[in-house]
Length: 346
Figure 1 (cartoon, helix red, strand yellow):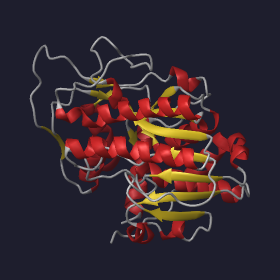
Figure 2 (cartoon, rainbow, N blue to C red; figure 1 turned 90 degrees about the horizontal axis):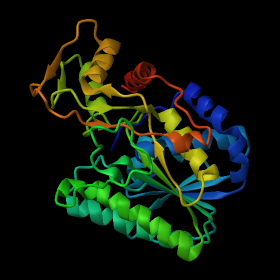
Figure 3 (cartoon, one colour; figure 1 turned 30 degrees about the vertical axis):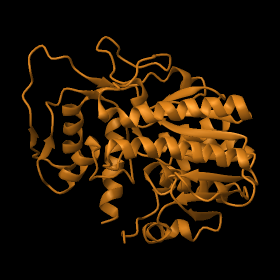
């Protein structure tokens, strides 16, 4: 069983509430259903909901889908004790529909963190999205937020500094590694179909890269691996040549953006979610190392090849800005806050 984790920092919970306060009235007395409730995104959604619900006396409830309620009870007893949060056991692909009425659904039930075969990844995304949309129709849900990914765009063209939502690129269907991105594309299409056929207001959040408490440090997230190594006093290992560009949004901002999109996002629209501030992988590793080790060492596995096209994965967030969403934490502060929280839970 996993060890219990501490709640999110109070300052982060207050920050999310401060930036979403006007939206919560539309959830007063409502009942929400969240898939993927026990993952990185789910933990932030549950904790920020619980805080807003208590502070504003909303009388709202969340039912969270999880495959392993017992593991979650061991991991987050502070959330399990909250009377506004209950768990529903099941696999996102075939869960039994819970009884009662629901007004909103957040489908975050498939993440990219689990090392599963491509076929299983694809099946889980498509079947899980279909199942969750079918459930939404069965109980008359009005608003449905689908957690998608910037992976739907495929590789970012080298001449493009930021990927806009209007870009119609796609993953390479001849590459099995495209299963995640292609699955999310189908998931978005399913949302569009259900929107047209059943009138469900579907909003898509195309999420890029993030950092913050609850981010797995032992998965394939580069910044998480850097933080793990640096906290252990080990050299930071870069598996590539350190040149690709990434951007990271702090998870408190992520929560602000997702709650705002659920409540205020325009139906039938896909919004990029992420930071527009690009850094090379090497620069990111240096920022992590600087935050933890006075005399740090960074090992880069591959040598730089002259003339190589530099890869990037950076969103344009122009549509999100129309919802008055912005990045409020700098990369350095995001890293420091993530490290501080992980130190406290040890």
